[in-house]
Length: 294
Image 1: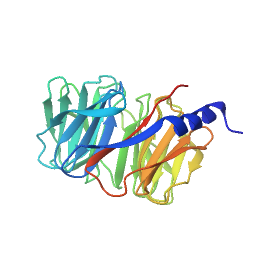
Image 2 (image 1 turned 90 degrees about the vertical axis):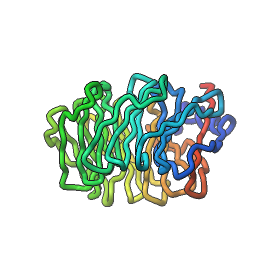
Image 3 (image 1 turned 180 degrees about the vertical axis):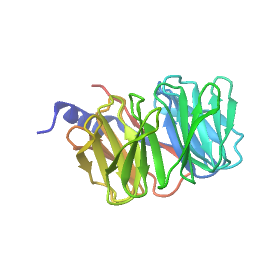
């Protein structure tokens, strides 16, 4: 039987949702992320720039472009508690920290390889960046110096801390989730999560679950405490490239090369909405607005 929350969400999806595209870059968009307060959306692109948009009611207004990288901006993320700071990872072997109040780069940190993924620790003190050579560097967010560096013998796809900041997770090309203690960076466990390449990982805001997406087109939901899979979502047909939980952790969105975004209720796996996305690679930002009255 569907939960009351699910039924209310279904009604809201039917009557209040809309999607729109906004011009963003002169080349393909590689990464998007919301600030912790939900007011700004940042995007990184193959055109070597980042852009920041401000959310005004049901539309995005471009606030600024951020230039300085010498190669594509492959991933970016915001500070977990400061809505004015974000960091970009680039193929130019640097990361840059930006402050939206000054529109300037406040720090540039050189790394050893072409960077493809990045995340900020929940306590805001450390930035982890991974490169194409499967090296993950841990950078002090205040001094901008390297704290540690780990070379892995497997293909590292995406990286993340857990919400408690005491474990570090990596998804790899063999379908496994590798878990390290933090800050010791000692191996704790390796989970055989998927039969093929495990591409992405995302923790829910409550800290109860995390989700992984794989080349097998499956999304798996995991219990953080028990480290067991509690549910799979199988409505996509292509490799799962990105995941996102709602602010309350009750809904999970997943996307791939399929021309839609699947949105599901976490606790039941029921489909909340299947929203049509763009049909081709785009230089624009595709946004999906849901006005909640619940």
